[in-house]
Length: 300
Image (cartoon, rainbow, N blue to C red; front, side):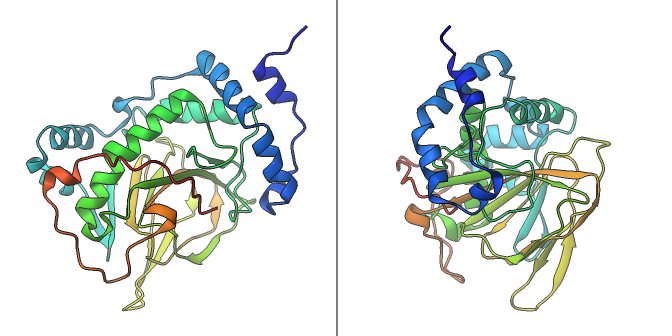
């Protein structure tokens, strides 16, 4: 009896996690040789497990302000007002609706149990439940339902907000990148201070109301004043900042923390130089989608 693409994907012999994290040459061949199979498998899986990943997942105030700005960009001030600067150059808002967040989490939990190989984020060796989200990444989450949701998030939400809060990134925001993480107590310790190879980083918490965790704050470091602040997530909240802002994930001591980490940058990884002058563009240009094709460049 002929196996389906989903059955073949689940049965394929896969590299060890250590081999994937070490980027062994055989691992790259594994993803390349099975790319079409995994794409077909995710499409078949999604037909059965697809969920309504739509605009109702977003915080109602943010959703309404974003929708208004796309209709009339001169109203974009209402979007900006929803982002509070909680550290120099770091802004926070309620991004997803906590009452609807379970839809996305349930979907991602099913993804984790799908049995289709997913590539973990390289460089985050202690991240037990992560996956690559962007099509430029080998072994990414290729389910059509998720990809439609992901593209809408990047194009309609992240990019115009980034241009609004950080005018210097305009032109360095045509390319996208993303991964999920799941930090667990007693397994994941911390991610040392670092900066991101992005123009802008959006870090969104996916924990559900009542799904608490201890520790696992994100410490931000002001390179000028050397000030260090530890910031924490509540369910569905997001932090956004230049990738160049130094930050570190602190150890988690109880429970688990689930997040999406999303990046924007220019072609071939270009990012604005620190201290670059803001780009002066009209509001309607901020609320537009670039026509640049994907350059295929993935930071890791």
